[in-house]
Length: 203
Image 1 (cartoon, one colour):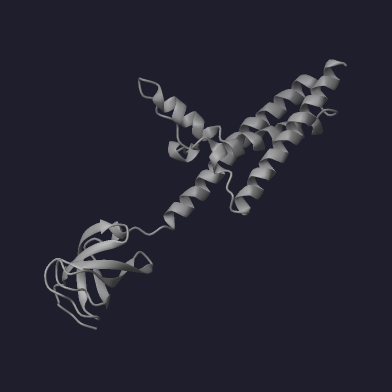
Image 2 (cartoon, helix red, strand yellow; image 1 turned 135 degrees about the vertical axis):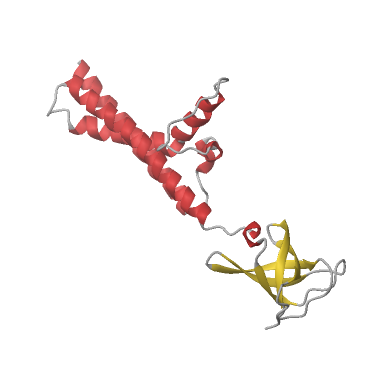
């Protein structure tokens, strides 16, 4: 087999293998099985391909940055692009030029897919609501809140452009349904402590 034939075989094998793995991972995600486990916990690396990595003296930042870049889906997509571009240009350019273009497409795809899924993950995170954002804000009691130490009720509080119902405990007196209170403490993601509002309103 000539070197050219070997290179063409490489394009076919790598391109098809990468394409099958990438599509398979996407299908797993759509089916709710999620192939994210194959990404070697890349989500914990807080990777942003648009930013230059800052490498600490001990070198730990290098590993985190590379883990985020070389996720399963980005490597599979890059392999597929390497094969497609290389095989597609085999008759237009000489083998060396075709390999150079295929390699450039490979690394470009590696970066782009990492960036794309990073943006999608960011959008998902931006859509989550945290009770911590309610601290200091006003809330309306939807289920009467008993006095301190006697249990919990519920309040509706505006967080961003959403109205969220949270469990609420009083810091002192009880608050009947309809009272307007102030969130004075966040106990956890679904529970807050409330106190009287400045206006002591009831709606």
